[in-house]
Every structure is written in C-alpha cells, then in structure tokens.
Image (cartoon, rainbow, N blue to C red; front, top):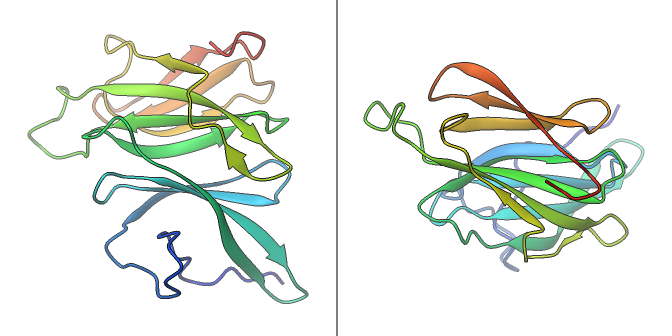
Length: 170
C-alpha cells in the first residue's frame, strides 16, 4: 500500500515545516504519476509541482517548481494535465463567499509542462475568459480524449464543457 504523508508542505521554501497558512485547495497527479500539482488559495495563491518518490510503503515529495500567481486577486482553484502531460491548465477564480456569488470572474490558463523535469513555463500558452459561460469555476479536468475541458461552476451550480484544441492550445 502506498501512503501519502497527511501533510505535504505547500510552501516550496527550504523550511522543512509546512506553512499552515498556505491553504492547499486543489491537487492533481500528472498522467505519468511522477508529479503532483497543488494549488493554494492563501495570500497570492501559487501552484507548486512536487516530484513523487515511491518507496515500498510510502510516497515522499519534493518541490521541483512553483508558479507565482499573476492574476491576483483571483486564485488558482484547480489544475489538469493533458493525457500526454504536454500542457497543464489552471482555472483561476475569486474565493467563494455569499457576496461574490454570480458576480465573480474566471480564467482558464494553459501552460506548457515539461513532464521530464516537472517544470512549468511561466508564460501562458493561452488564456481563456468568457464570463457569459463561466464565472466562478472551482474544479477543472479534461475529457477522455483531451477535446474538451470540463469545469464545475460554483457561481452557477453547473458543469460547463468548453472545447479544447491541443494543436492550437485554445
């Protein structure tokens, strides 16, 4: 049985003690299962990628990259990887509360992901925004064939499907 430590530090600094103020929000394994992406919603809201080292009875993690949030006050809610791990998409939205319901905004940002090193190119490949379709998405994932992105829309309580073209990353 593989056991993931109950607390993965989401602060990529050399300090070995996890920062309890990081507030991890979304996690997703890369499709190769070599990496774990973790979004945080505290402070600016960053994304960390952890390399996974699997022993016989446990999994240990080490942070290999951290992506700073350039869309604050929106925060990264969730991530997903294309089946070949060539791209990682992130849904950014406001933090949910009764005052922002149906008034929030959101973005889907695509980044190039290097599955050999676990690094993310910090310059987005594409940015999608259509607040008529979605406002406060909370979770993101790809369809089985990567032809669509599925979002859980917390502001409107619905699932949104948006087409995705891997050739043009749009």
